[in-house]
Image 1 (cartoon, rainbow, N blue to C red):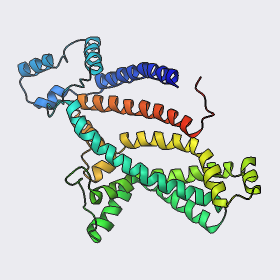
Image 2 (image 1 turned 135 degrees about the horizontal axis):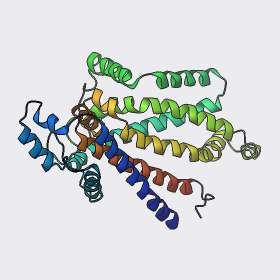
Image 3 (image 1 turned 60 degrees about the horizontal axis):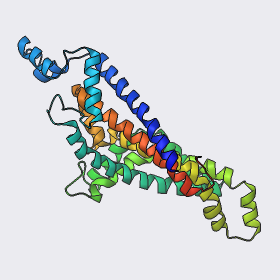
Image 4 (image 1 turned 90 degrees about the vertical axis):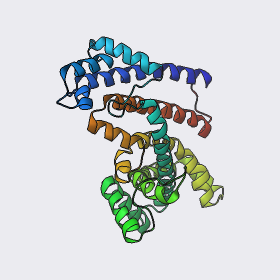
Length: 310
């Protein structure tokens, strides 16, 4: 296992370097001048040239890339062109908020998705199965922004049970967290329910399940201990990668609920063409994906010791 982890960490290096290069190329080719964004269209030429030199934007592209690569590898993601705040410091404030939201969303959606999927598989082709899959199809087809606004209208504006937006004061505020978490996790819960149902139908048709039943084991023991445990390996993969997706893809949810997180920070940077922030967010997003993928692979062994990485 140790050798496998070392190999995977070494393979991460070229992946992240490739992400850095592609991010820089896209920033370099995208139309627009960050200096004009900072100073305005009517700034004097000498001020524009002086600021371009200060930001190293007048250097050749390869020199800019080498400087960008060196700074990033040192953990310096630069400063925002607009606010002049260090991107690293801003992400230290934004990422925990997004992590909190994504964690709540993945917990809710995983519990609901697996439970609905298992029940649907056990009661295959009954009204319970049809009802569960109808709801799953509804949430998969529902746009996130529409569902979020629907929750705000019903629970916040009509019933007054939850705040309309924001994350409240303190490190944890359930009233502010519950609607964004449900909005962010709803589509994944529906997808996971359908996926779990499909996997469970394959598992419960295996010979070892029939053997367990023939031994007189209770049905819930057969389903949960023998069936679900073997179905969890592909499910863990989906949950792990979707957790990374939720961390990186909470843009709409954070925008709708004015949640001060990673996604909203990125959207604001894109609107203002704040290239340093965009590059930093893409780099951190890539880091999240590769390390979550590694953690998921390690969990495989915990679920099934027969898996070997030799």
